[in-house]
Length: 195
Image 1 (cartoon, rainbow, N blue to C red):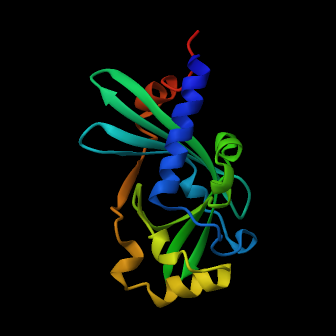
Image 2 (tube, helix red, strand yellow; image 1 turned 90 degrees about the vertical axis):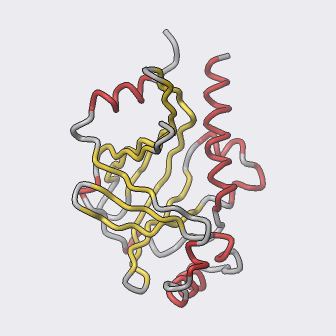
């Protein structure tokens, strides 16, 4: 029963991603991307309401990353797992803006999304700061009319200063969690099945 509830929570978390915006078209060519070893490790973003996201970035090869995101909430000392998903990611420069494409590769998503499974791409402007990463989602509703990677890249480049490109998106700041491994372990423990 617990395993089923974790799968349901994970599915709800992944489907929430679709609701905020995923597209059927990838941006850029992952084979032309260059991965950055400085991004490897744990990163954390947390809101005032004690909900947050822990992200683990693995440099998969010289072009791409595997990124596992753990949504969580805290109530006192108790951490609740709110869902987990896995993506393949790569960076593309568009009009001097660094954009990271996330492709959902989570098995729960692939097995459960049905006709929505093709909408597996999302895009984030990223800014690498000292010890943190700022991520701002691109508005996929604004980009939905693009049918090829070339059309998508052109529309982003043509609208890089258009507020519609980022409409409805708040920036998230992820800070390195290298010095917070006790917190990281506590969050990861919430995702373990009971013994």
